[in-house]
Length: 299
Image (cartoon, rainbow, N blue to C red):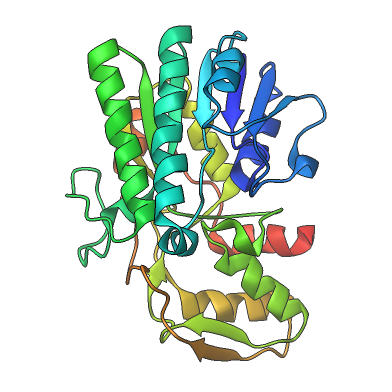
């Protein structure tokens, strides 16, 4: 299978690209604004370009890709709050560009959406049928991306899947990466015996999912499915509990301290993955303890 990965020099994209290389050729398109050339697998073809570069996208998609995995764009809530216009430009216009290239090249599209589209909905676990209520420019841009995929699927017959990723973590993740960046931040602090600072009181919950499980969801989506799917572990973890588990696994003397709540953050987030399990065959393989142990051992 020939594949194009936008954002393939980033955290999730590079893990996906490595897995795809076992199945065929891989082209990565990334402007390195948040990714790193060091993450690009040696056997992958690399194009340094933004998703706003229509000519580069068209050339990459026309290169024989059967599936385009669209992960390129601005990552995370905080940056989108600081730069909402750039978020809209890159995440919305960039997604239109990807879809146009795929329409012309007749590629399947798998889009990295986000659990943030659900907003601060107090009713968990989240189901794909729940009404979205995004509370940040990042979340709005991801919901817009899903809507664009749905339009292209209905209007042009393009085969499209949107994966609503919950809090992804794993080896090679940078603190600035968004997703579950609290994990590398806590691990780095614990290794230095520094305090682990939680935003708010730490009782807010997240659905942390190991990156290899997320890669598996992308691979499954290249073969089957349509519409939007939740991709998470299906298990809630408080940020305070996460900090305690990392302190335990690193055997550090760090303490847990408090910091102000972040703008745009939601209170609780938990995935109902029954639709992905039923239609994609998705099944998370890693517990939080297993995943954290792998990250800590990898560093």
